[in-house]
Every structure is written in structure tokens, then in C-alpha cells.
Length: 225
Image (tube, rainbow, N blue to C red):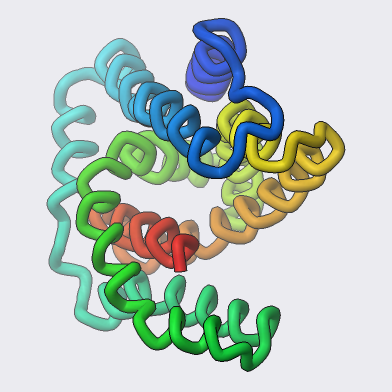
């Protein structure tokens, strides 16, 4: 019920409320469209998690879920892992892919400003996703299946939840349906991997939503590098 409500409501909003980004509009126009849509659907994972928690599990369980948002005492090691790992992965990938071009090196030399400029804002808003995906759905699944299977299930629905805004964004940037579909496939693979990492971190930190928020924000901030 949770996955159906979260995914379908978001896809309906993206595809049927307003319009998709105009094909080939360019990266600036596509990003404006993306940000407007994303800010609306961002809160659906948490909204339905809170509603279903109250209906089926009661206020006590709801309070326990909310308490995990402020569960900061999980050890400095995990705070460092959640913060540094995404930046290390993305900077390394950029260096390998783009080579030693002078302009690339100049940009990467200043990467930390790009990272910090996005991280703190993202940290405050990704609770809209993480309270739902890692706070509510992941522990509920792991009560019945293995962590790897639970990570895969969450990853599939999490990536499906992204399909609408990803498709509109990449269609607007490229102007090509085929290229947009290619990016959807690549994004799905990426999300499945990220879901596995977040599941590992969650299981090592008592399902701390705060740590999941940090890693998610660090990941999205690193993408901008």
C-alpha cells in the first residue's frame, strides 16, 4: 500500500498536472521544470509513511519513527562514511572519465565549494524522502526479508518514483526520447546501488534517519560537482 500510494501519486502529479518540460529546452529550462516538480513530490514518501504509521501502528510507533530523525549518537565513523564516501566516488569518477583537461582540474580543485553550497540545503529537505524510504519502508521490509532483498525492493520503487522527473529533465536537456530513456536506465542502476549503500549504513546505525539524510544530501551535492 505504501509503495503504491507513494509512486502512483508522484507519477500522476508529474505527468498529468501541468506539462512536461519542452523537448530540447536546454539545461537551464529543464532544471527549472525539474525543481518545481521535485519540490512537490519530494514529500510524498514521508507523507504516506506518517499517515500509514498512524493508521496501522498507532502514535507510539509514530513517535519512535520520528525519534530516529534525531538519532545522532551513532559514532563519528559513520558520520564520516556517510559524508565523505559520495564525494570521493563522484570526484574519482569525474577524474577517470574526463581526464586531465585543465578546465576540469580547475573545477575539481574548487569542488568543495560546490559541495558545501548544496549540502546544507539538501540535508534539510531530503527528510521528505528518507523518513519514508529508510525510516518506514526499509525496516518494515527487513522484518520479513533479507537486507539485500529489502534494499532491492526499496531501490526498484525508489527509482520508479523518480521516473517522471528524470524523464522530463533529460527530455528537456537532450530533446531525444531515446536519450531520455537511456538516462532512465542508467539512473535506475545508480539508484539500486545507492539503495544498497544506504541499507548498509542504516543497518550499522540503528536505522538512523539522520545518517541516511546526510548520505543522501552528500550524494546529491556530489552529483553537482
